[in-house]
Amino acid sequence: MLLGQLGYEVTFDFVRSRLDAIARSATDRCFVVERNGTVRGVIAVHLIALFHKTANLARITALVVEEEARGTGCGRALLRAVETFAESTQCSRLEVTSGSARLAAHEFYEKNGYVRSDQRFVRPLKA
Image (tube, rainbow, N blue to C red):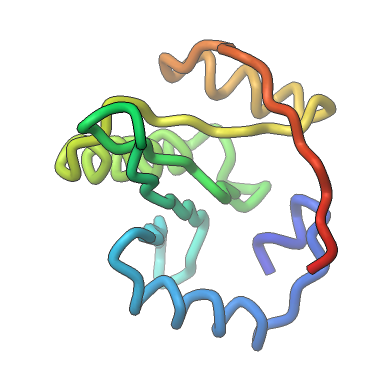
């Protein structure tokens, strides 16, 4: 499972339930890259209506490309699909959060025109 390559322990049923929820959502989308009948990468994005602007914010909530397919343009294609979607939904900004240890991911984002910006403060909540 692709998300497992990032260290997420999720089951097939869990992913299917999330995909079902995304399919019913007006503010979420999921795109995949398929090569030779196999999903090689996936990206998910969530739209947020901004309180202080008329525009929306798009947030990438997941992006993973199969290890063997990295460096072949799959990740770039996924980013372009999300960027097109974000522009078509009046987003003024597209953002992604990447863990501090994911240095290759940081380099990938920067090579694709993303810049480090701001800081995020997080407070865990009981789910």
